[in-house]
Length: 449
Image 1: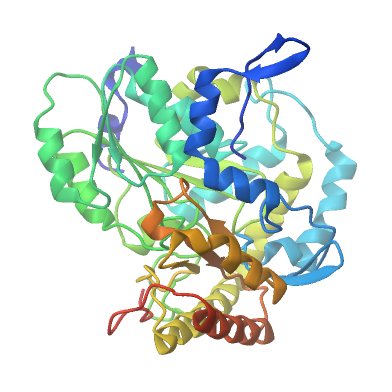
Image 2: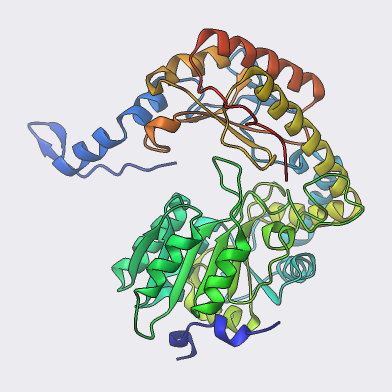
């Protein structure tokens, strides 16, 4: 790989939780003022969590993409198991043998010892992604909170204005340790370059952003950000949790516009890994509790003694290591067919939204479809309308999204059926008659990749 030495920062070479602080007061507990302010900030979300059947729900049973909550069966459009690997019989059948050999959880931290499946997964992911090396950790949240502060040191983090909350939280940890955080407008390479020119000194420079956005389903022009990273000696840090597994390198024989192999946004857009780290997870397309960094070997070895999850955290469960390995095998055999099914069903829904003149920000054709309401205060009723008609979605409430984007998100999977797509389109048509949705402009909701 070219320029790999530049990816190492110089200093290395040397469910929303509310935790009330309460105090006894006349036999009762009182909330401190700071908590009152936080609750006021998330009032809409807290209300929905406590009263709405599509938040904090208990799923009593699952059959395919049908789920039961209490006595009601619904179609699941909230899962991120994009390839349907959670239901693949070959993957499920592979798990008992691993459990028999390794138990349920070896419980070593990775610094002490890694069971052989860890090494096998890292080697296979390295080949799939076409990168120099891979480091596995339990979750993407672990990675952001531990790795971003290490990479940034006392330098500068240039943070995309719509970067995922977990990236933001990692940047805030880094800020507490001396880093400076500057935010650039979402997907705006020109604004990033204006900011990066203002920073002097020799400290590390990190450009932190999403790949496929978890709400809009759209992806940035990685080549533009890669150019800036290389020109200004910065490290491009990309979280492609929703792209990995779903989209991949382009091929003349690809069965759909998502490309082949599902080897992430870098390969899909043919952008090199120079001055870049790719962060991804197997918890979505591969339905396994595991995450990774694609990175130079030298940085991998440094993080083994600098990233707390490698030193202290327990490993992913053996079942997740097993389903990851089995999933990688299934991906090689028939993953492209799953992606083709996923693209076809997503395209049908996006075409229906275009015909219904319902606006969605999705311009990519990727399987994340956000539908904003014209009136954010209707989210309770709109959610109930969907629930009562057997459609289970992800509610996007304030402050998870700005008030002008409040609505709901549909996540399509290869395991959803054509009949379920028919039902969803029928319910969306009825929803449009009952509620005021943001209206699409001419040409919106078209499918592309």
